[in-house]
Amino acid sequence: MDHFLYRDGQLHAEDVPVADLAATHGTPFYLYSTATLLRHYRLFDEALSWGPHLVCYAMKAASNLAILKTLAAEGAGMDVVSGGEYARAKAAGVPGDRIVFSGVGKTREEIAQALEGGIRQFNVESEPELAVISELAAARNMEVPIAIRVNPDVDAKTHAKIATGKSENKFGIPIARAREVYAHAASLPGIKVTGIDVHIGSQLTDLEPFEMAYRKVADLTEQLRAEGHEITRLDLGGGLGIPYARDNNAPPLPTDYGALIQRTVGHLGCEIEIEPGRLIAGNAGILVSRVIYVKEGEGRDFLILDAAMNDLIRPAMYDAWHDIVPVKQPAPGVETRNYDIVGPVCESGDTFAKARPMPPLKAGDLVAFRSAGAYGAVMSSEYNSRPLVPEILAHGDQHAVIRARPSFEEMLSRDNIPEWL
Ligand code: LLP
Image 1 (cartoon, rainbow, N blue to C red):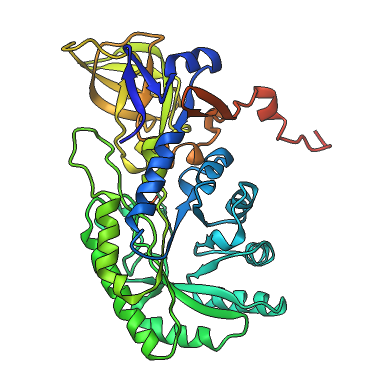
Image 2: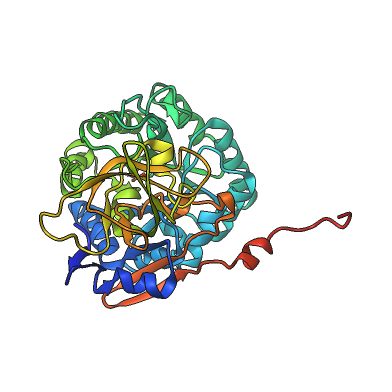
């Protein structure tokens, strides 16, 4: 459920009419709903309320400081994967003991940054990384909690580019080698073996792969405990999918997911961490765009929008489906037409949808891409020298621009001309 609904014939974000924002701020822009973000976060928090837990929002999904602050104020932890994300978490007021650091290629600088700023745990992905964390923590006379990310060799049954839990993926340590690596970790200075980490992929629409992975983690917990390790935390990753198309079967709900976690690992008495990103932010954001032209093609009409692949890359990159709806509510029973919906960028890949049935639209009309809150703005670029689009946050009848649209001058001012030119 989200808070983008038609009211009086117009799409609203909570109580804010989307068309008013387009008139004031221009298009395209990303628009988020505070109530939806909070609702999704709370669903996870409640789904794990049967035991000690921390929901660590995977901020790679949408990392605007205002979004982070909204969630941090609710008590959310953060899952970060770079020094930049760590800096964002701290700037949003998240205490170090609520930040977990994931990622296969943490640099020495990033590890030092987190050790100095405070960290709940490193999710370690390799032995060389473990050696660096040990060296840098010991040099500071610290003992830092770690979880080792195990690769359970489970097929997440999602798009190949976002599956991470098969043995051929670059992530984690093969679960078969885990005991050996834990024994080594326990012998290292500066390291406090604390937990097990697993993340098998993103946009999972079925609980079964989670169940297989979590059962393996439960077995491993018991084996490691038998070998003398104190395993007190399980980080079960993110990945629960969202409905991208309104008429599709909905993926399992956070409540079902929480019950599955309780069933598979609840008996171990560990503190549970999860790292959801998409389910918190995805349906809490839309991308609003204007039709520049309607172009009649051979056997199809093109809706040429002012948003492009540089603003929302998911359709080009993962063949992702996003519902695209007119901002003005179509009259009931209006006959649809099929459009190819494209952006202005000079690549055929700049296609958002093919033969998409839509009510008849004309130049100047507004449309909204739904489910664009996660992996939308964060994956945008300035390709074709198109400035990054603004982000706006709605809250009841209020709204705020949380990232402004840069002017051309601002965009150009980041380039430097060498003195010999
Ligand atoms: N934890 C780790 C270690 C991750 O790698 C990810 C996502 C998450 C948590 C959050 O997963 P979520 O709950 O959002 O599924 N750009 C792609 C998605 C890439 C996901 C990368 N890792 C897309 O637009 O579909």
